[in-house]
Image (cartoon, rainbow, N blue to C red):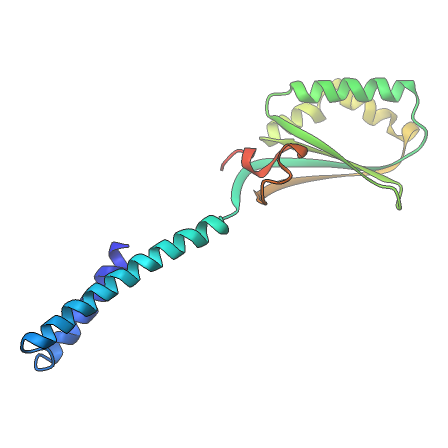
Length: 177
């Protein structure tokens, strides 16, 4: 706030210095004082308005987070799959750096998507290298009709607070970068 005020005051003073006859006498001095007061009020109003805009439209929050998205088409799941899937889910949640997960299904295409969120690539690698995960990967052809894995760095998360606790990693809880 001080910088814009200083720039404006500097410009006004330079203008006055160039034309000293314009503001000589008592009446122009009062006009000058009033002009400075109006400028001050306008600058305060601008500051107030910009703070309201900033509150209504906050900057997106940068995060240090990674996601691993496992997209797959299913075959028939058996008891062994469900047992191994539950073990892997419990193991993933126990890894330091695990932030949460979400599952999405596209019934029209017959695809399922599991999205895991991680604080670091090292935490993600802990899952990838775990014996239970390697066991599931070795048997994937038995349960899956194709898969794809997408590893992503999350650049930012943002949104309103309405989805809050329905998301694995709400924007307000994502770690700051």
